[in-house]
Length: 199
Image (cartoon, rainbow, N blue to C red; front, side):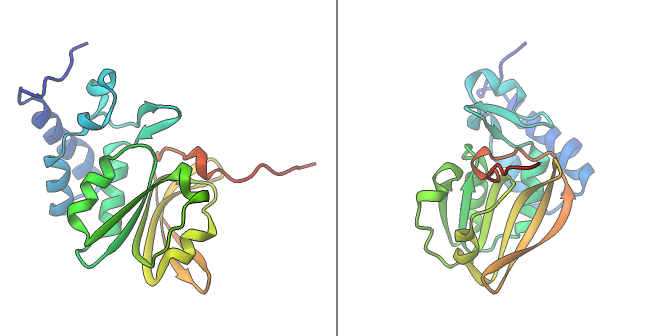
């Protein structure tokens, strides 16, 4: 197995192949999404030994149960989020800074909170855009409270063992979700539902 040498153009060729064979063929055609993902080397966001897998169409393990989601997942998340420079954005990180690096130049402000720190972090807000970089079985109420009344929350949801990309809107003090697409989104162990007794 060869290692990607960033001094050679292999990295740019791999990004172009990712865009042409994974994103475009799956309906991610927004020019600004493609431009952002074409410019950012994914291999900079994975462990040294996983660089050859950075552009594959599956999640890349980062260690400690964390993953860099497949390019299609993060392309779809960005497209559905439709970030704008008027957005105050909150990103719930699943362990990789890749999505944060894509998002930062597209929004007015960006706050990043690790999924493992959600329970102990004051989210403040309001945020017009909240993105969860992964799939959750259960989202904390604090996210609904941090979302602006007209804001949107983009996340993966785990339902019956299937992960789906969904957009949430605030209704009163809660969130209502519209499922968008079944995708292989890495599940965030930090956002698992509490285990309940069953008979």
